[in-house]
Amino acid sequence: MASVDQEGGDAAGGGSSSNNSSSGARAAADGNRAGIGGMIHPGKYGIERVAYWLMRLTGLGLLAYFIGHIYETSSILQGKMGWDDFLAITQTTEGHILLAIVIGMCVFHTVNGIRVMLGHGGVGVGRAARPDYPYVPASQNYRHKIGIYTAIVLAAIAMMYGLAVMFGV
Amino acid sequence: MALQAAGSASSQPSAQRPGTQRTITLRIARSNPAHDSTTVGFDDFDVPYEKWTTVLDAILEVKKMFDHSVGVRYSCRQATCGSCGMMINGRPRLACFTKIDELNSSVVTVEPLQNFPVIRDLAVGFDSLFENHREVRPYLDRDDTELDNTPDGELKEYAQSPEELEQYIQFANCIKCGLCNAACPTMATDSSFLGPQALAQAYRYVGDSRDRGKDSRLKMIDDSHGIWRCHFAGSCSQVCPKGVDPAMGIQMLRGYMLGFGGGNQKK
Amino acid sequence: MASAILRESTIMKIHYGTALAAVALVAVHVLMRLTSGGFAASLEYETVLANYRFLPYALMLEIILVLLSIHGFNGLRVILLELRQGPRYEKAVSYGCVAAMFALIAYGSRTIIMTNMGMV
Picture 1 (cartoon, helix red, strand yellow):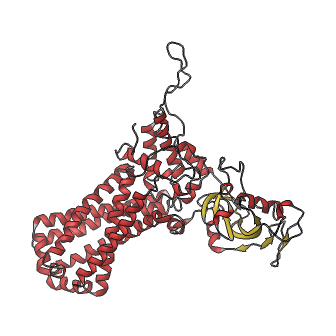
Picture 2 (cartoon, one colour):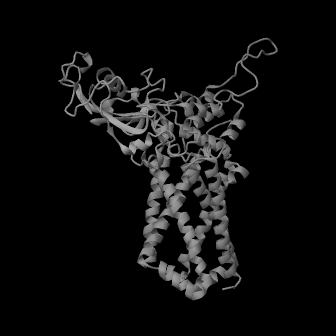
Picture 3 (spheres, one colour):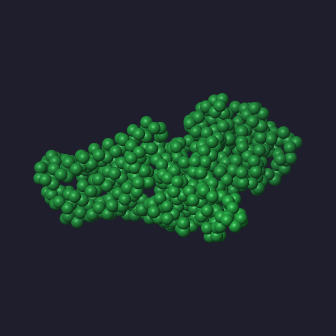
């Protein structure tokens, strides 16, 4: 029969359990939902899941920038002094790097958004057909993967171009 | 707690041949929300396995040899009933359809399916899954029936070409195992979302040439927690053990709503 | 609120439409920064003032403001609706996002209109 190892415990009764606080919250009666951590989950579901949360993050980042940009440009109402003062805050190395990140977010959100929009219309998601083992899902095809990688690469190129323009390289 | 079988003086045949068998540590999540709503622990068991041993086999070995109190639901053991879905090394899988050998890990952690309420240990409640499935009216919606007599007294049947069958048969393979809902990032936080299982089944009937309920079904899923909360992350399709590809069905369904005619559909 | 007045499919069609329109107009807006004698020069007070006072450009800025406000705050509404549920919360999110959208449009429009009309 099975033996109990050096840590001891009772085989029949389940014995002592190592409690895990992070899992503890998950097991609460709210339905064992994975929560925001489960929503992100970059390692388990491939590049499509990375694109999913990048889309969200860039969307939120762009909205924050947009609000800031509206506030920033309103300084023109204070005349040349007000405009130049505000411009001096943004025309710094940190400001340029921030703007380069915004450019990257904008390009990724745009290109990936077009991919997602096409997918939402049923474009490029494959054709329904009797599946054969090992059941490779047609919707997770190379076209969409290429679209995601294209969005990431174009965002990186745009960021570099933006930095070159802003730093006058 | 770690319990070992290999090397023991067991009289059970499954724990024999220590020289030829490899061993993994099976970490089983233990909880009993009805008794204690917050505590989840893990019990470790050293279980021998062969090339063909499935995770369900290993769990049943634990139940037989070490701890009969492990809560697990299973039935067919051949990926047909959809009962034994669980998180295996952090990913939703059917325990009966996952060989330990293919996991390439010395520790196999099994937890209850995410996004479903835990009944006990590895068993989760599927009430919401079945409720959402019912909500999309998973049956042919039309006024007449196959049993209606035609004027000449013959029984009629709904004619359907093989091509029309191909349009939805993939989605009819769903075994309601809930893996897609466990993988879905929207379901991770949205308790009101219909979920990929129900939405794919909505498409299964919308795409069926015999069905006449397309408009009412599309209206039903056009809700703030309906089809528009899918963002095409595709995780549902990646974990589906039957090749249903719910993400494809959902996008085709949305294609109807956006006026694209559902991608490759003729209807 | 928004979803009570409009069907979700209508809201999402607006979401997609505003995105596509904004992509085209923002591209023009960004190109203006690169073609007006260089990036730094395009941000000088006189250049920006001239941009605002050129009516077609001011109109384009106003359209971009409206398009991105609708798209951005609807996106925020979607994310917030998926994070938590409940009738009161969802109502608050929908009303809050619509209110914030109007507030931002009003604030941005004030800048565009006042500058365009020479009130600076």
